[in-house]
Length: 294
Image (cartoon, rainbow, N blue to C red):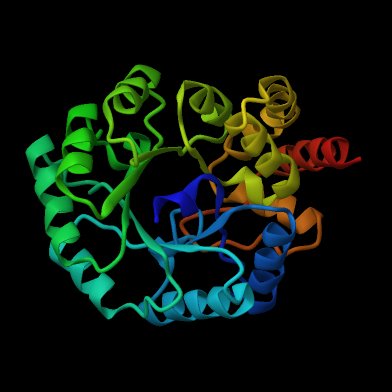
């Protein structure tokens, strides 16, 4: 099962109309764009998808659209996380998981649990979840790190916890996980610009934001890295290095939505409290996008 999640997954944005409604045509365009670009799997309703500002009905519709357009072509990972353990369990139980291959579940935010609390949170979910689970460690958003010890404990104790999306930026922590993990447990990059070095350390790929703007370049970089073609992978890494820095400089997903608007996939609209990027940054992103794609 975990073999499905080697390579490049993309954390899909959710396109909106100017009035805030779901842009289903833009979402369909995006799914086709990344599949045509060669990515290995799709991640729906993560942070990049602005799931925090969507109703349950909207989330249901977004998943339906992605499943319909995907039509079985790529594995689908569904984001279901939160800081209320019981609510996460109920949300998984109530979701239509037909056509979904795994759950991506962010570590509890705001509450700032202990490591034992984090372990017990994921244990409770793992005992109820019918699908494989990918842990998501992103201390920059949660204000709480999942330690290497906790990640490894979860990987050893629960067969359906198959991977971690690591966005701590702590390379020593990531190496400790890779060195000591079970053979079939995947360590997936959660930082686009750290993907190449993480693959060099033994990582399995990435769940990417920028990869949906440049899917053919990014996914080939990852495939090359995993195949040991490090010169080719390094060249692509530096080709995308500056645009990736730009995309996150005023928050996510404003930057990547500017790219997607420029290449004709969907509009830039986001929901409050997110706000469009500045004109200066947008101009720089467009200029760099043109350079990369020329």
